[in-house]
Amino acid sequence: MDLAKFESMDVVMLMSIINMKLRDDFGGQLDQFVAFYDISRDELEKKLAKGGFEYLPEVGQFR
Image (cartoon, rainbow, N blue to C red):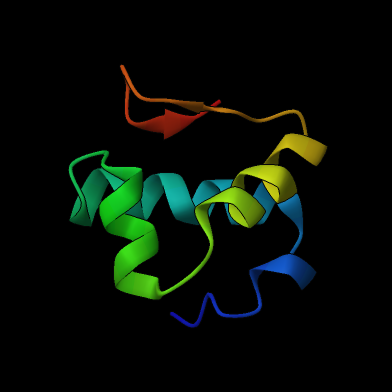
């Protein structure tokens, strides 16, 4: 999956994809996820915050 252009994606779809990848491939570790895809954690969190989502490290997901 090409997440290089996540800024232009629908925020709900983006959250769903990221949560699935976090769960299935990264054990809920956002830092590992953003490093693997070489994307900015700050920009990703800002994009998802526009949709009302925030990263909850205790569950390893955006909600």
